[in-house]
Length: 101
Image (cartoon, rainbow, N blue to C red; front, side):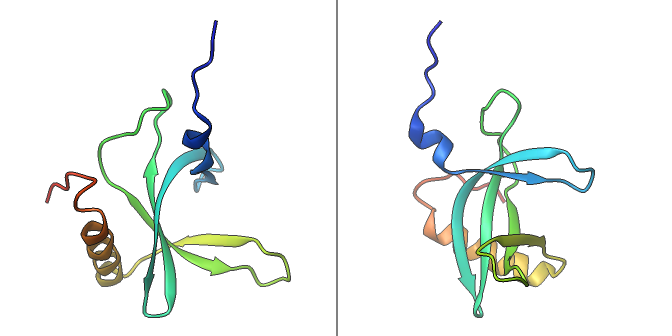
């Protein structure tokens, strides 16, 4: 049996842990800068490896407190910030995705 997984497909997969400690895979779509802060736009990946049609996840990028190069992603409670980041993302990718309001 042959595995047909393209290398580039795996390069943009990010694994994060949800609030229950379960590992969840996301496809990295974009990095958006707003007011000096950076936000990642992620698409949840289903068990089958297919991209799920639906909502993207937007998280704020925060540098860790120690000297390591690791970044952490935190959820955003501010609906206004979420909407602004999503509008920037939609504008950048309007030719690549069909957005449904």
